[in-house]
Length: 298
Image 1 (cartoon, rainbow, N blue to C red):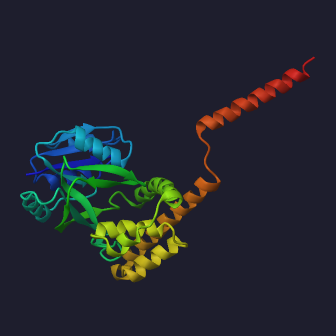
Image 2: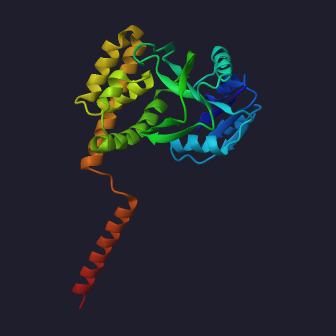
Image 3: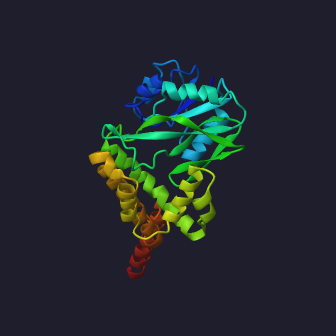
């Protein structure tokens, strides 16, 4: 058996269905980032443990969770609130942990958007590390998300999991990706200044995960990224085969790329002043005004 972590923040619309899909496991832990909605209240209706920890970043949250939150089993599965466990995937995970050949396994997501599976324009199968031995994996930050570090070889699962990426509505999706684009802009700027593109990994990487990450490092350096991304997803990946939902999905991804580019420009040429600097400038102006008044006084 393996334990299941569920990461949450204001997930009252998704948490019940997520927990119900995970109840195949006998050890479920909800790790909440101090939600301000009814997430925790709903979660506590189920036979699960609820732990709260202030969110710093995706990488740090996961590393803290693995190291500080005890589990009944050495193997764990990470489930996001807008994802679902399936009986088929659960059964394959049980078989996978019987061997000591790998320290972790990647599973592919099925992006669900506008009531259908966006198969073509989402680079399916796109893998995420989900099942692993908790003593062998930790995380680092990368852009708005995280990257895993594995102390040993990893494998790939055949079964997939549904990811309801827009389950809370398009407004929430846009708000979330507005936040994400800020972190991605910072990471893009760092990559452009000090990062490199590994052509060897891009062309001959050992896995789809390595090649996809190398492709992302390359894409950061390409001109006209938003337009190129739309053409790549809609035409070359076959997004047009996903119908109206595919067109909408590709358009949203191009918009997200454009938002990142604008914020990269802002960071380079028009950085937003911090509140400390603003207060300092106000204090300086006040002192100048006070000095001027004093000098003109009889």
